[in-house]
Length: 422
Image (tube, rainbow, N blue to C red; front, top):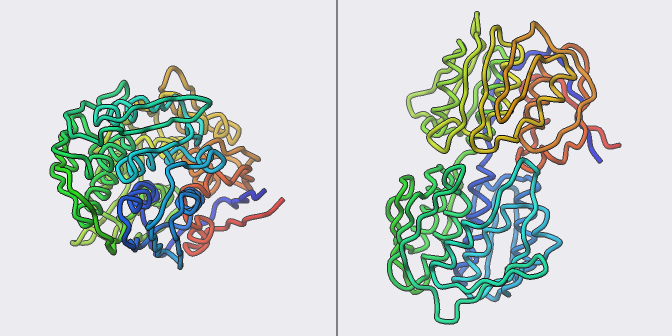
């Protein structure tokens, strides 16, 4: 099992390329099941989550080839059952339900796994597919779907307790593109990753309007074709390195970004007193630490609000920012597992009922820490870059789920980090 050793008090400087979006790639890879023609998908990040998805597609019978960041999928002959041993490793594997049901009229998918950051039920996924006419039977940890009369378009509200469901919107959209008639999704997720999936499906021949708004309209078609598509940049990876640049940088430039996708992250960095400058096209950004950074208040919200996937990284930044900051996660209130580890490094953080009160300290000190989930892992790497001494991060497999070669990119910027196999 690997661990990362981060040597603190190094200065990051230079330029890196941001990878394709992990959260956009996963449903797009699953959507290749909707056609019997080959699909080519570019800038798929080399992370364990995408590797698991490709294994699932192979287990379903698809022919999958991967060369660097380009994936070719030919799902000419597929089966409807996704194996438990693969599905349990990653929650996003649930997004094969919609394509399998639409293409084959049946699907069998195990209840998914993933990182433990609070209750993330699948009830909205089931509600959406049932609305399209699917019969659903849950038995022995498996979800069995059939559509004896075919899928029929309908109007479905996907509003949930903590806001719209991104994967639920993805699943319903993928199922509806081959359903008979019109489907209207109310309270749809507006995240850029949903828009990217819609753009992919539209290129395949789907008829979709309204992606990126709370109301998506889909008119079913008889079949879809293969396409050649490039995934959007990963806004969470970009945001993570923007935070790294203000915590431990002296001019960090990121290529392959999307300014519109980073608006909330940029706003909070500017409010905290840091410097953020995009080029005219909005696809390159340079960040520098401010002379007198100050604390701020953050509340997570669905896009275009502040992303829950950036909460842990900003908590790490605020740990050494002067003043008192309040970080509230309204989407996953239990998602503060990085705080106990940051406190081992000297942070002053109090967590209470989905809110972290962060009192900035002058410095952190390196310590052995344990990664508990994907974004908490990134927060510990950021803290280690800023801390005095050496920080050992165990369970690094969490960070490998969603960051492509993070240690190599830090080294490229001049940081001191090493991967050690125990």
